[in-house]
Image (cartoon, rainbow, N blue to C red; front, side):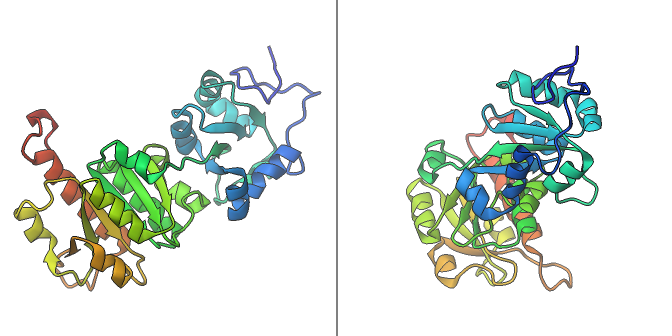
Length: 295
């Protein structure tokens, strides 16, 4: 039986007296404002675009506030519509193609968008869970790089990612898309003072390592010496400027990724992947780790 398109149900077929939401529908207008950082900060909400991000968001109860989709997309992703009803009667609103275009930033949107509550966790709460691997993005401004590092940290088994100092907004649309859903898997921390982050990490028992192309410590040598076999936090700086000198100096060591070929350097996302996976392997292969859990 057809039902109101605002209700999370599989049978969301629209009846003639139930018009699709348009770009001028107040709820679409309100959601569209979330493209702006100030509105995300004011409302504590952000947009997650595409079925992969929506699926991951729905797996965290209480995160999704509303689901929008074209009729074709709501049919195609009926499992997501059903999940929206299951996790707490999340409203599902059918909209026109023009309204979808107003809510998305990609050239070829996949027809479905979720309005989500922001996921910030205080750093002390994240550290109370005793993460063995943490990534700190210190004043990284590029949302694509930030989202890719977040995704990599998730894949490497990190427990938390910290956006420190004047860093990009992790809820920026490009950052959310680049994270490919990993945004919803980790403890996400935002902290104004990078130096304070380092102090808290060290107090929690983590070794703090600064990734730097000019570091005095070679990553291969550090790995071979067992220097990554204990809980570690990696500091990553912007691709253009690297880590602020005072922050790099506050780390326990400054570590460079060895370049065996003729490339001048690695970009931020590649260097972060190498560092995080070196730590992940060492942590999973170290003493006291059950054989079944070792890499």
